[in-house]
Length: 126
Image (cartoon, rainbow, N blue to C red; front, side, top):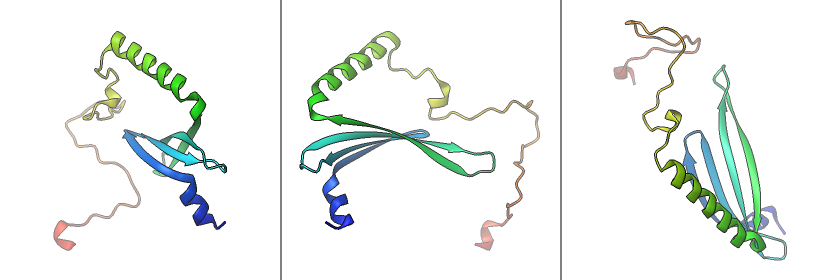
């Protein structure tokens, strides 16, 4: 079997949830015996000081025999959190308008980032 045929057979159905620096991938896949299972992958973006970035991924495999118990416990856990803490997001980092504050004192002067690969162009130049 060609590699493309295997990939088409393996990935059956997918959904993506983007949540800030994290992205969750939900995939239905097929086993060699053509049975289905689910993978849930968390991908988190990390940015280095030099501007480069990398992703860390964590994956779990969920098989049909565990679906009911998994769904029950997940429902119980999410209900517990929402009942005890509500739906309001407490961590300001997860707010849509969150802006990272720097440890330096604020001044009236505009802070211009230091960069060696910056080219100043005017919009009319484009």
